[in-house]
Image 1: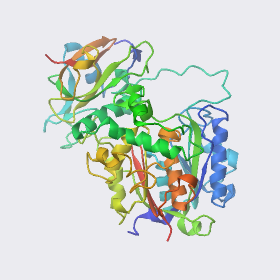
Image 2: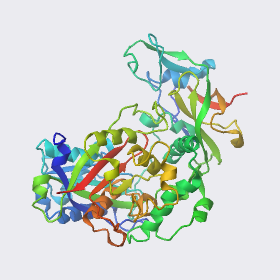
Image 3: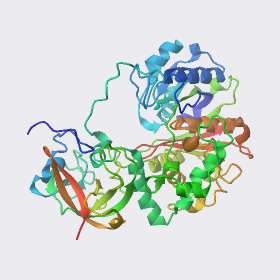
Length: 395
Length: 140
């Protein structure tokens, strides 16, 4: 399996800002703090960083919204000297990791700083001159969604969920286990936005957003940045943290990716292709995964990732999570051990990656899973994009 | 054709191009138009310059029956769109011509309680400037 170049790259450092539900700090400052933390955690200084990648492509000067902290802006603040950089979208939120591994294999860079910076709650310092956003026509993947009073992914995901859950007899009580399990985990995570316990009755009585998705099935917008350093494995071995090797990556797109609706295997999503590619690049199997960190922009996406990555069969995710024991911290396959985006906050994929590294290192504090963690799976994205990474402890 | 509005009644509309005109404007004749491959007959939506099945470039819009079934749906309760009353249904409709020929549609003419997976539906059009917006309702 040595022909797959990502195995020559490893995560050498991680960092994460505060996760702010109420804006207190300018989102760009949060981004710089996370990046500084990741570089320091790797035992490096900004002068050692020679590559940079973020997702999505972010305009310079962005101070709030879905993406802040462009590569030029971060490079200016940290004084980076870059041989290679990329803000592209090949594998959704995990793109920077896949691209960093490729850049390292190509010899473009040795230490690549990667980040995901969200400022969806706005800046605490509003711009007095901010103009109302222009109305832009529905285009691209949104063209056939936005004309139908459907401006939120909650609606598109809910439609997929209704097909899948009806077809396979998956109940709301089963879906609830994603939110309930994650809230239990969040109680042990001091950074999580929501830590108070919730019961099944709370869940079933929660305000409906778009059936079958309630408020508790939707993630929590926040301001936060998560950063990691991806290093050439040999170089990472000289650094203080144990390297977490990128064992395999997946970014497959084998069906139409210009629409949410046209896949021949609806209600599957691109995540199934990303997962298929991932498993072709490693000798590990789903049963070898100790902990899984699965995207939960909406709870149903986590069920879908469980099936996509082969932790259970098609349509079996409801039974798999039933009662919540199997996916708990001390269960057979703990998932979203930090509380995920449903409870910790919408760190948008990189929070899952950060948590995967903490669990592999044994640094997850009170929420550290009791068993030894050698291999972790991270699956991120929904709809027409998906990306997956398998991490393992360096031997 | 005059300028096309980008937004109407909570509907963010597309810009009309040579790739989508048949779909968004074709309903003026009361029928839904979808691209179809001449040689192999495969329906193609949205636009592609070559047939995904046979690679042919011989692709042209053709009217479909406008009939289909609800493949999935949600009852949306969240007031995302100012001025649009909630709750309302948004459905994914599979056209009868081909299983992967799917369209999203809200269903303002059909009572919420009547919507279920498998419900037969048919197209109708709401004129919005140059656009004839395809929408679906329960078929009799």
